[in-house]
Amino acid sequence: MCFFSANEAREKSLDPTVAFTKAGVRAELIPILVKLGHTKMEDLKKDKSSKLFNDVCGMRQKMKLEDVANPTLEEVEGWLA
View (tube, rainbow, N blue to C red):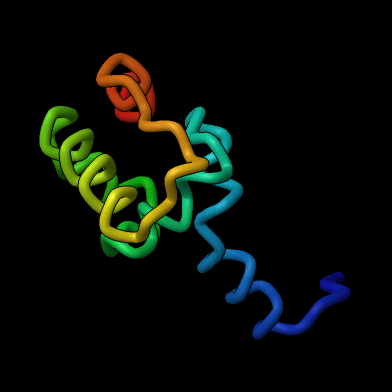
């Protein structure tokens, strides 16, 4: 028996936070990934690690998030593993 509506289930499936944190993405980097258009792990894994690394670092700078540390290339490679 399901105790929540279909809309609630759909909202949970659209939230990338859970999947991204399970993959090892730091919470402060998730808004950057969403801004880049990555809402699912499948979307994230379509890019090469070096391109994703450059995109995340560039968007962090563009969004003026100086308090958020850039990920390392090894960290990004771990997300895609």
